[in-house]
Amino acid sequence: MATMGLLDYQDSQGTRGVLFEIGVCAGRYFSVLMRSGHRSGDPVIGLDPFLWIDEATVNDRLHANVPGAPYRFINAYSTAYTARTLLDEFDGKLARFISVDGSHEASDVLWDLRLTEEILHPDGFVAVDDFFNPVAIGVNEGVHRFFNNPRALVPFAMFSNKLFLCRPHKLESFKKAIAEYAESDQSEDRPRFFIEHRNRGDKAIEQTLWGTKFYSFG
Ligand SMILES: C[S@@+](CC[C@H](N)C(=O)[O-])C[C@H]1O[C@@H](n2cnc3c(N)ncnc32)[C@H](O)[C@@H]1O
Image 1 (cartoon, rainbow, N blue to C red):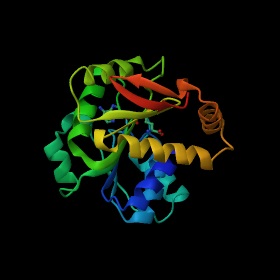
Image 2 (tube, rainbow, N blue to C red):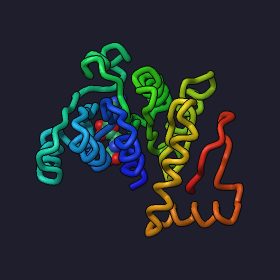
Image 3 (tube, rainbow, N blue to C red):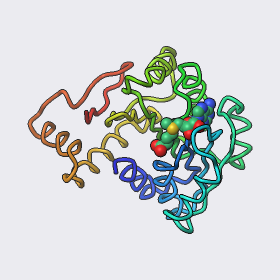
Image 4 (spheres, rainbow, N blue to C red):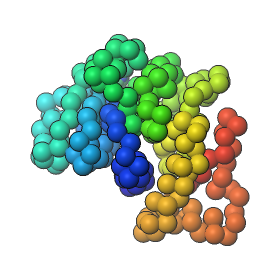
């Protein structure tokens, strides 16, 4: 729901670009990208070697559950791509949203984040899944290795297992957008917790990572 809120915010700003996921699996999160692409007309592209569920089965499920929403799969490992060859696949368009949820090996996560940094639209954002997952700890190592050097990305929110990133100049805009989403969705625990603690003046909702203050939803 938070991702949908952020994508809707992006739509309201008129940001156009590819919606891209590394690691589609059965397409659960991918269907959120499809919803947004169906509305905006932006290309929706998933990259996955389909190690766990075969591509035909995923296609059948998506056609049944999100009928009529266009998308495209690239059946490959992300490590087979550079930023240049990915942009060729995107017809030169930058990505306005990237979900990083492929391999959990630290070196692959580092690779995926380097790709992401190069192909993200200036007003785009990124969701890195499993940042806090103890049984996918390579993601945590890969992200820390990435931020060990100066980067053109900063964290703006942490929400359950997902770490959200954007370009430094968009930090305050995306923090405001996710806080507005939280205000609008008080039926869910995390947004309710965030707003309650913010209204109480609890400084714990704003944490610092790699020198950037971001919103933590727990
Ligand atoms: C955790 S699942 C993705 C879950 C999906 N994003 C969701 O939320 O429903 C991980 C997927 O990454 C794929 N994968 C593994 N290594 C990969 C790589 N190097 N590049 C791209 N995808 C990869 C696997 O085939 C698997 O489908």
